[in-house]
Length: 196
Image (cartoon, rainbow, N blue to C red; front, side, top):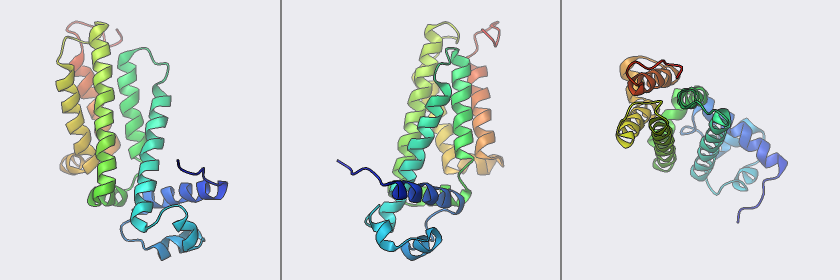
């Protein structure tokens, strides 16, 4: 069982998350981090045993917090179209906090890349559940929900790795907005009102 964080440790992790999101983490040494946060290396070692473990902890914390904020955003939304739109808008908003340096560092370091991939998989699973719900409620046309979710998952992965956004010349936020439009337009029942 993990010990509860002290208030100071929680504040340090919040500041560290903000630093990593802005500047990435690959180029920092523990000395650099301690200097930037005005704390000792022993304080950092109390959070994680190495710089790499610290990166994994902070990246995991970022994605966990993002997922919680997105879920809070969609809580109580019964309209499945609004739920999908709000979910993807939330993902776009959360990713807009992350610099290109952060995304590149996450992608380049296998343990943090694994965290990223788990989150992409979780997002695809959530989208699949939304699609299945919409089909069952006859809001969406009959589709292969797993296939649509897998395609959405591949697009999310393409956005998160930067491949898709680089090729298209758009931001992550713009890409998630476009994904929402693509999904919702593609799922619409023929002759159905978008507000159905």
